[in-house]
Length: 266
Image (cartoon, rainbow, N blue to C red):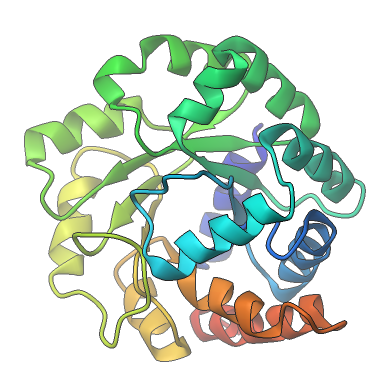
């Protein structure tokens, strides 16, 4: 069983909610990314999203755009990142999803990239700018490689399209709780409970909710109406603030543990 499927099955059995953490790969460098990944696993993160640096990250807000710039400046490439995934796998079995723009996959060759990613220890990919309707070959190759195809659902997605997207997904469905780009927010989005209920009408897959969660109280609120909470910009911000410090991984892990503890039952 894929590590993502296994983790969510374990969470369901335990009656727990999941925590998905996003970090920009190569920020401030790939060695730091490897150490942060291990620290996040120790902090209780259930799924790790690694953002693959891209020069035109249209779906990302300023915090994550700057992280992508730092990742590119440190020399991070998709191939080097996969080498780092191999290194992470020597120290951790945390499920890993690549948060990646499709152009980067296409540039390397679809089948080759997917197979190399699977061999490195990746468990799934979220191809941000690939429409599901155009993803037949991608999905087939992903399935054959044992990887999960993660798809996004937005507040503006019509219900008939939700049905079509969820029919294609595996691993989990990522619900974007706000319109626009990623970034920390003062308050969680309204109507999340209704939105996740609509999605659950069409799938038994876990629903992970993200975009804007930045503190323990917000994480608790989102966990109450979802299967998992996704936090990205708040973690990336910690990396930006403390990137030059020798105890960066420990600092980031301690911050994330406060969020994880907020949604986990004792």
